[in-house]
Image 1 (cartoon, one colour):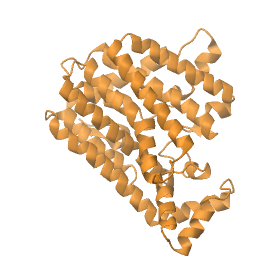
Image 2 (tube, helix red, strand yellow; image 1 turned 90 degrees about the vertical axis):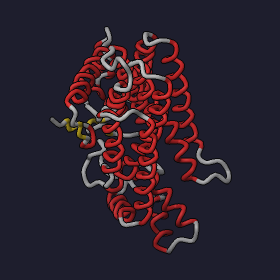
Image 3 (cartoon, helix red, strand yellow; image 1 turned 180 degrees about the horizontal axis):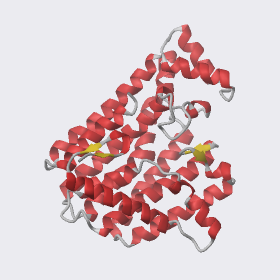
Image 4 (tube, rainbow, N blue to C red; image 1 turned 180 degrees about the vertical axis):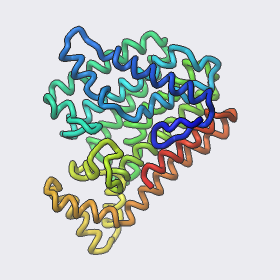
Length: 337
């Protein structure tokens, strides 16, 4: 029996498959329950992205990490997955306001559907509901989540501030991603393991794995935004490009151009710095990046990051859950291939 989950991940162990299916079903129920309010409008806004779906990458990792503990079926595991996904959803509401995004997961973003104020306040509402659930998981869980949230916000601020003088933009960007994305994925693995009763060593390994695979996941999104002809990323291809978001392929291009790149490199950089709301310029920029070696460099960075996550798994007990985490590294990279 095979479970075809996120990114084409296949789980061939029946017990693990049943655990993941039951867990993700419980997460969906928990998300809908946690986003209910006595005010119908708040319920509608809070469930806007929940009902739009998503890959549920973080809850999946909670379920897999829980298999390294003695009580993977603990109700606290489900609660932890709901907490992590609610936190992630809250950041999406806020991100869309900051990026002035119009589409999220194939539906109008909350800020486009309503306005910025509704989107920001809805994100705050989701943070509050996540905190309420988190309190029942104990003080350690609260501390872990609080630290990750601090890192997440720090990463967002660093992204806004830009690289410090003399700092390589690519190095700065990877630091930003470790905070903005890696930190919360690390929490997913940490809480999944701890709520199931995993020991400290396994929890530490899984937490670091989450940090690395989370960063690889975001790098894959960067490449997919350029390379995909479909809407596999949940956004229209080239969305980040159109919005002027400096993702990894763009940063590699700029670095090559600054280091004495060809006239074609310089011309492509100038094009990227123009108003890409114009469809013709946007299409030209997208085609230029797809053909440029900078995209291949970004693919290599993604594969390298996923490989570093995979290497950690040798420190965990063998079994179906470890195999699934190993395969997930390949599945994340395959999204860009």
